[in-house]
Image (tube, rainbow, N blue to C red; front, top):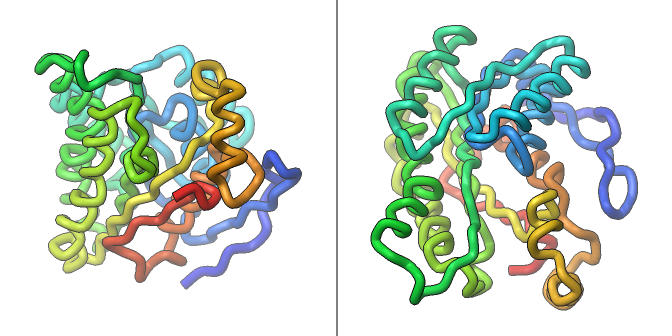
Length: 270
């Protein structure tokens, strides 16, 4: 079991935060869905800073290319990436296969991709429902299906599924998203026993309201600020790096006996 040591400073809303360095992640191969921006980009950068070999997919080619260039400048190693619409399961699984062919079997999978578009119960059509599930629910299962054979060959693995505390706090602005995200815990627990026999761990990380650029631009209104002040136990706003740090722990050998669990990073909201 490795032990974390000091790493470069990560900026936090409350001031400088020293993130941990996990020696076991050096050289590990990591695949992240939705890794081109927001929380996903923070995780891709965090893994790259640990010396991991990172691959990711994202539908946004421009931000993904910029992220790859930034990581190359900082680490002298560019991540593998591909523009991919995860609603196309064949394309997602082919991307995982192609990345593994270049980098090797993946030790870590982070199922991050999601879209929390606002909608009402009355507005949902069967087509909209299918589209939301194709983004927020289905890709995680089929990404796991694609990486597990390689993890079995490695004799170990860690799958981290990104959930949400939104449905747990009874948020009403996105019922389809809430349904999809509530199913993440079922996916995690439903696979833990069979994967565990091969020393493959699977956990859920459920973020609270994280201040990504999208969230700040779209929904951080004065009313939103008041919600944070009223509901969080901690006064600081959650940042993408806060989520990345928990994911690093679960991916590293330090989390080697954690599986079938949900870890909330929400400043005490739920």
